[in-house]
Image 1 (cartoon, helix red, strand yellow):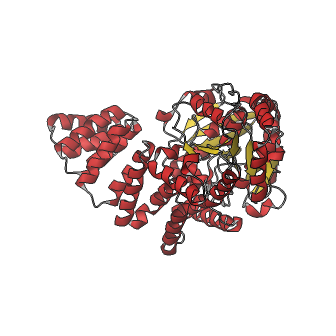
Image 2 (tube, helix red, strand yellow; image 1 turned 180 degrees about the vertical axis):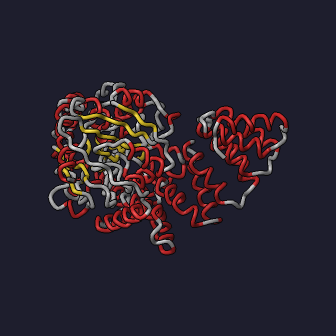
Image 3 (tube, one colour; image 1 turned 60 degrees about the vertical axis):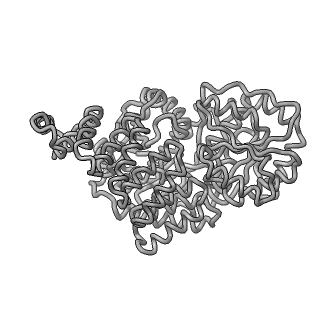
Amino acid sequence: MRADPATIARLRRQVQKSPGDAEALHTLAVLLFESGQTEQAVYFEQRAASVRPAVGDFHATLSTMLAVLGRRDDAIDAARRAIEVEPDRAARHLALVPLAWDQGDHETALASAERAYSLDPASARASLASVLLNVCRAERAIAILREGLEAMPEDPWLLSSLASTLNYADVTREEVLEAHRRAGAALASRAIPLPAPVRTPLAGRRVRVGYLSGDLYDHSVAAFLEPILAHHDRDAFEVHALSARSSQTADAVTGRLRSLCHAWHDLGRDDPEAIARRVHALGLDVVVDLAGYTGCTLLLAMASRLAPTQVTYLGYPNTTGIPAMDVRLVDETTDPPGAEDLATERLVRLPAPFLCYRPPTDAPVPAPRPSAGPIRFGSFNNAAKLTPATLAAWARVLRTVPGSVLALKSRQFTSAMVRRTIVDRLSAAGVDPARVEVLEPPVSKAEHLAAYAGVDIALDSFPYHGTTTTCEALWMGVPVVTLAGDRHAARVGASLLRAVGLGELVADSWARYEAVAVELTNAPDRLSRWRAELRAQVARSPLCDATRFVAGFEAGLREAMERRR
């Protein structure tokens, strides 16, 4: 049934005449929701659920509507009622997973995913693997995905999940590459058939470039995209934002980004065919993917070829494996000669570093380093990046530096289960749990950055480096020790540190990584000087030089177009 005004009006008359007609109430609610009248949709869906409380679909639909409105607690209550009505339907338990996760209730998210998996492994496998990864159980997540692929070897969503999850694991780069090749081929097999984009001469006109992302809000991607939008040569480039996210999540950062574009397109987030057709119709010269496998819907759309030149950049640390993706933008440190063998796209190397950081405007001034107290190591990286090898190296550093403390902060640490997992792993490696501090989640970005006052030396994760976290640590005057590995995700830290003049903190082995960390503990004057001076050093470095960077970035886009022609 279509959500046109005449149909909605007819249903309104029907429910006025028959207020106990639950199906009509539900249908009206769904059509109102589809037409953007969400508050009214909730009202009528609540009425449907009250008339027939034993219908699980009514509670489940109500939960979805409430979540869109940002009423998370109410959405969880409705999802729980759907489970009470239909406890043996996997879909009901799966619906609770993202709601509980977003509320920081990781235990409920995991339990719900496990229950759904026990009821219907095929439908719940990818969701359970995602939760397992984010509660630091990557090994089991990978095992579950591989088990599913034995039965469904060409399933694009399982393949995509496996490719993304392997970035967090201590596995070979060849294994990771093969997973991405398979995922890309599976997505390509599902591509929406579209006419070949028309390639028109560029002489005398601007290049029409579109940035495709679901993260055009207060998100780490935006911190690196904003300098590009702000410094694009507007006489040479016509800039389009392709926002694949609910408009209800827009914030102040969204507003800033919108003001920097020639055109803004709200695409929605769940329908790859609709996204593909709409972007294709824009007639862009270049579409830049900023999501990779963090947004598989968008990759599926790009597999259809939305523009004559397609580029992947920034939001994902690996190849896409998609034949229609032409170019990947990197730099000579993240992807040195030979890295071509690890990408299905052609590599275009930007002048290093491959990104430009926009420091937060509300960052507090770095606090002076305390003159007394124990050495405090720290990592504010995503807890999913804390592999066994990383934790083992950190444990060796802590054992070498008597009395030292490790401060950890990540959104996952709101979960007692995750805190216990990481502390237990460090304890098994010989670290007294009393020397591990898990910091409270901050209320604001400023509070998050202020927590660096309690860190002397930041330790990078491996093989998946930090990016935003490394930039933030440096901006707050805290040096970062990183290990340069054999793939892009494991070399980003090297690119950032060399860009700000701290190449001596880049190690080429675990032994050297640990030695650098320990050596810094014996240089308190150096640590104090960095706390006072590093922000200025970063600000005048290539990492924050937007004018220089965007000139190179635009040249990279033009090279991508030429190499595609």
